[in-house]
Image 1 (spheres, one colour):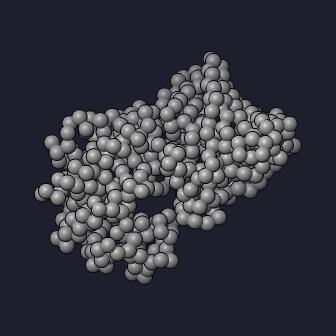
Image 2 (cartoon, one colour):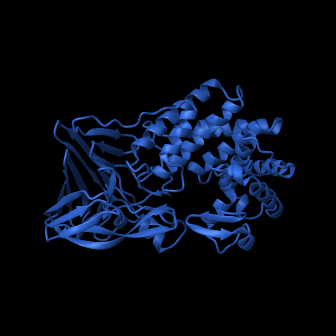
Image 3 (spheres, helix red, strand yellow):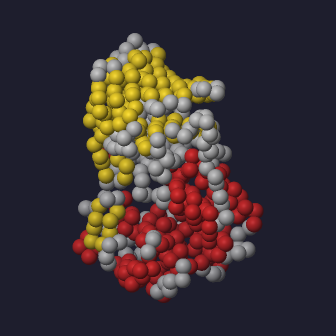
Length: 492
């Protein structure tokens, strides 16, 4: 908020006095954000107390029970939590808002999003736990018991053994981790209301999730962009690390050994591999696109990767700027918007509509080998098996202390194949010949890229680091020759 009723969500501004609480001209996600009331607990919220108090009462007066976007289960869940957090922070919630809060929870309890599952259902359960602890009486006890039952059921499903969220989105992982930390925080405020063993298990899960998030982030402090992911939606990893620390949860994060050794972290259950040295952080996607029954946030990004060198992003995935329906949403989810291989102009997983996936890629035949001087990772996927020639893409990454060789091979019959390497907008191509490119990082370091197999060209591409933000960048496109393409990147 920049003033009373002045909002900026998803890099798009709006004035509540002009658009109201449910302007159909605004995208659904923007309206959702309007009803979350996240600013109640944002940095500097105390200085906006009068605005917040007026907004709370305005919401109750203008959002009649059960009517409009604000009463849908997901925004209701987030708003319930935010109102209770604001109250527990020492603010006096007006009595009309307390009554509305009870009504919102009662409404939500009868409309849990079992049909959507995933993070929506978990957010519903979290809201029931918050309200069940904040209120007293028989109905509140039922809310608490129901919320705890759902959480008990969903945690083993939604948090994998390596700590990763099962939707394989670093952004949603961070949101889920904040949910876990909030749950630990509120049960600490209401001691002995939740079983000690339950709280201990939540603590262990949050610790594991924090370790995964730190490992799947770049040296610039932000998350990687696999599946639906963008900065500015979830708290930054450093903010969550600080929050966890206040709750007694500490994670050292991935270690980087001296003497330029490459440290490999294999997140086997979620399907990602991190390689780190003093010079680089590489994040490799050898994962399924998501749970088979819930692929709504999946992108066709199998065998893509992201690479930071000297602390600066160089090779990226395209990110996410929008939800809903339309060509831009489909483009951002498509294979060509990621640093991987496109065969016959098709997507490796058939993304469609806004949140649907038909035939999808499954990774297989993963190999990981490490010596004192080299780390090699290789993996295949079968996402193009439905094409007439049943092509299979196999990618090999070969890391040394000062180089990365990437070799792609497509077996079976196909018309065309291209390896795409999206560059971060801050990286520049300063020289180019037929088989060599010289790249420059923002801080001035130079890197050499040699084309070993295939024919290279440059294309303009798009990079979406935040919702509502699309930047122009460059993409190195490597057309296959004799079924293969290969580049070698060197730095010093």
